[in-house]
Length: 369
Image 1: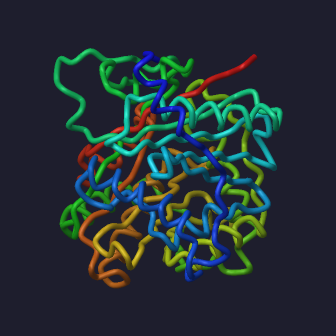
Image 2: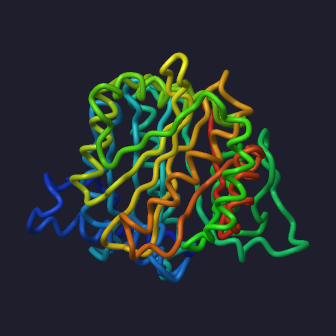
């Protein structure tokens, strides 16, 4: 940090702020300022809010829950809001890890403000006996200039631009790039001829399985077995060298996620493959939609359980959900998804369906031991 930055930092404060009790809470100017920074960042970087949470969704998420503690911070320079930070602390698993995120207003970068915010987050994490810090950065595909020098992931596949500001910031503060994810977008509607062709190919391998689905709330009789399938999502997808422990899901944890989504204005629908002989749930996929951004649908989890792979189930559950979008969310014009670069099988399914790369995520980690 150059000496020219010192005077500016003299008037800098980084403070934790409260999260409103409900999305419709009046006032809460600090949290609104916190959210406005995120909105401005997405508009500047992407030109839209397709990847940005709504205010209502942010309020519900940052309240945290029994499985994860969440804290939000504002940075002010001489009273002017110039940045924000977030700290997440898992409470059930991965209890030696912390999630950190730093965002500085575009007009105040390269003054040491991000460094100050990060130091506050890391110090609080250390005080909670966290010894591994996780962070990620999402950026548009246009930043991956052909022939540009990349920083390769330590243990995953792919890389991020070596000369980008986010890469320089992470490396300067001791973080290593562990994994890269591809962010892809699919235009809607998908042609029925393509869906029929892909469905026919997959169905040849799927004898003995049937498809079921629901909106917003898993049926009571399925919630416990569905929770077991959700647990696999944290152990059966590529995590490169991030070293995360598997999450333990039960019916209550499923209901917490569902109720948080609904309270924040997020609708969801699930497509699930069931093994007829055993009644086991073998595969699932989830889509979510926000009325505040009606054109965009998010592809959440997609998983095929070990022992049921090789039967085309991943393709079949995705097709089932894609077919339902136009009837349930008719204003939707695209679906967005993320996949680890080394998850070649799921990427191949998405490519076959017509998804096109639109961005990338760098998954960063800093270990103290």
